[in-house]
Length: 170
Image 1: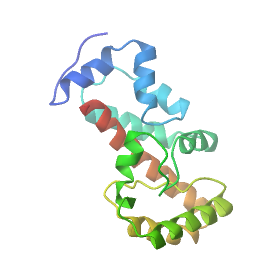
Image 2 (image 1 turned 120 degrees about the vertical axis):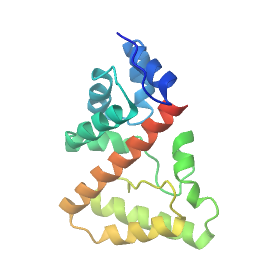
Image 3 (image 1 turned 45 degrees about the vertical axis):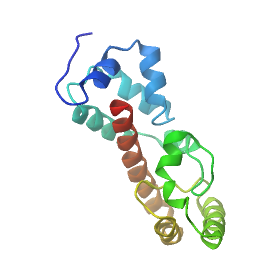
Image 4 (image 1 turned 90 degrees about the vertical axis):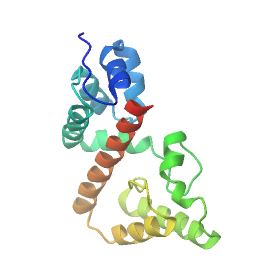
């Protein structure tokens, strides 16, 4: 595989481009736990730029089946829980200073969401306060299932992009 470098993220992108398939898969799997997404992202190496990588990710998210989405969501902790890896904790850092009341409302909202939609509430939490996440949770509880599936796919797309950027810049 030829080494391709074009931007500030050269070293990490070069590493991803030239990593053996198992190492690349393991690295990309940290971004999203849907195997078909991981396969698409790793199969399209080498990437000329971060934008190429992100576009491949976006296209792969569009192609995910509902089962794939469920696999992806399974890799995400509930909003407000302390579970998940380092990236999840960073992404949900807006809940760190939340009041006990807000935390209780998030837990209650998470349970209601799971009851209604059968999955964990997924939101690209980066840069959002606990109150903003709670507001989105409450709003989305009123969504019809088809509209909510579209929102979940978009939130997953945004999360995957942010995580790929972290991967390349780490």
